[in-house]
Amino acid sequence: MKQILLLISLLLGLISSFAYADTPIVKIGSKNLTENVILSEMVVLLAKHHNKGAKHWRELGGTAVVWRSLLRGDIDIYPEYTGTILKETLLDKNLKSFEQLREFLKTIGLELTKPLGFNNTFALGMKRTLAKKHGINSISDLRQHANLRFGFSNNFMARNDGWKGLRIKYRLPQQNVRGLSHELTYQGIENDALDVTDTFSTDAEIAHYGLRVLKDDLEFFPRYEAFFIYRADLKQKAPNVVAELHKLEGQISDPEMIRMNMQAKINKVGETQIAANFLAEKLNIYAAVVEKSLLSSLYTLTLEHLLLVSISLFAAILIAIPLGIVAYKYTQVGQIILGVVGLIQTIPSLAILVFMIPILGIGNAPAIAALFLYSLLPIVRNTYTGLHEIAPGLKESAEALGLDPFAKMQLIELPLASRSILAGIKTSAIINVGTATLGALIGAGGYGQPILTGIRLDNMSIILQGAIPAAVLALLIQFLFELSERVLVPKGLRITR
Image (tube, rainbow, N blue to C red; front, side, top):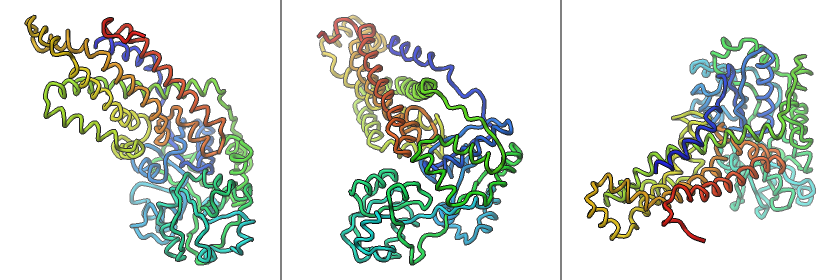
């Protein structure tokens, strides 16, 4: 077993030099929305323009994640919308106006800019040709067409200001409604798999796919005016950056935001470049945008991914092997151990990641903790099984030699179980490579980052920049473990082929 630990320690040593060199002065978050990423990139560029270190945690997994991160101080600022914070995040505060919102936020150490100028409200959309065929112009008209196929983003399905409230307000009869990723809803409309979906009013896809936005004739949806919300101490850390952000108040019109979204999603222009162009136009601030090469990006992503996988796996080995030994030695306790680690494995990985945020914040720490928990079961079970299946005659021989329990375990039982234990570690490592891609949802980076970005932008080439390296890494780990079996497993226990 010393050899196994040495192998993992060497892997850790290869990546231990990878860490963020400096703590950024301005920490920016963004939701998994294209325009949110663009707005956050404006903050990054403003921070760099005023010689302030900045880091952007891109495409975090939803409003709840960025809001909690802001409250914890994991981020300093992010773009938000009036409708979301009033009708969803702070619904229980019963705030009625922007000024009431401002006053409340001051009590919890937060500040905000005035609205930036555009209203990105929810809406329902369908193909113009289909809407014309059925004479549908408003949401109320949908009551007469119960057979239409509805497909909404998962976010819209879950929100009080989304499908749940809309169905009640309009007394809509549709029952079989699908929930899916927002980007996939447009593909469903385009491929005629869906008839009606939710949209954001500044989405580039509305014009691109020829959709009719249905009139909200009962005025269910509030205004969703964008603004920046930030921690009050940011005014002391980066006063010039905050001052520049306030200059953007009222400066971004609906058509301008639609145009920027169109550049990113349809014309495939980078969000950083779009943000730089806008700042040059509105504030006369010219920021040089240096795009990373594919090789450089792959190097960074690989180090980030290895950091997540190796630390979580190493910690799991240190804990899981002793747990497996305890489970083997003590039957009743062992059943509890096996039951607990088995139960952990049944919890959805995304749920564990989100659960970790209030405890560990965003970034590497919660992702590593979640991966550690998912690594336990294969190692614990294989350690237990490997020890349990040792032939009784061999155990009796060890006792006949007069070995004490510790020496018996170290010299006889663990070496005999080493092939099974190594197989469990290999299984955990391969599972971790895939599961670690979800870490991007909470700012952990790795191969999941381009996958998230590619899905958001409907760009397969970007998705493959994360998916292919993840698959190659999993295969490489499998090969290395099979190779290491020749060194770590006693010759008589190896599988001959």
